[in-house]
Image (cartoon, rainbow, N blue to C red):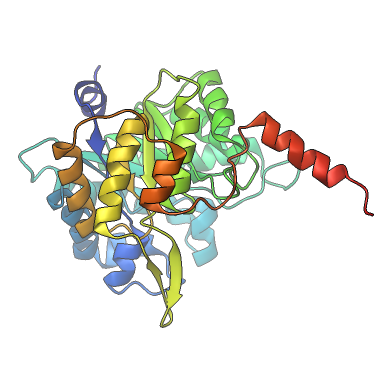
Length: 338
């Protein structure tokens, strides 16, 4: 059976996703260190406001407030046993909001990392991860999510565990990794490694890509790394609104709405089909992104020079996909001291 999400993915030239969850909830009063998932129960009106404001700004798809509602993360707040319940609540609130609009709006059930280190380096087993992801995915499905949305993953092992878990739940899924360490994930994967991983899966995602990381420039370089391997699966770009800066005791992102409008168009032209923001992205950014995607013509993929000129400098000289650059770095590391 064709899902609402699959239909939108097939029919649209591009889909505008939402922006930040954490940044917007902090603006509503969430305190640092608190688990935002508890607000699904204690502050449901604010969670519905979070969802609604992104759709009103132009989003076709929004992520549920369930990034950390897996048992591994919730146990840090003595609530590991509430993973299914809080995930289901997050999706139910999303369904309530999405169904009030007179256009298709997709509820994407957010699934974040467990925060655990997998065997053999750590003690966390594949089987434990599959069980945890399955519990959360089932809660999101039962709450009314249209699609499961794995995000901010850094390791191959965790991505594989989630894919296996999602195969047990009859919903399409998407998966993104965070390439925040000189163009690689924290566990060393490059954009091209991710393409190989996704294409090897028995139960592949409906779309895949990158989220968070550093600035929008780096994320677009990663998207172009995906596109260079010509994957058949649609691509996702969900970049931060600029670079975080600590100002007056708070984290602020320096990406303006106009910068994010440029980013959205360049993401589309670089090959992304689902385009949104991550940390720091507010409704005013989404409004400009929507307007730019609707009004600016499709063009060829921007060069890295153009990306840097419009969005700011890259955080590293390369993204780990250029063999010549990697060979030079290895040679420098082997060079004996004078």
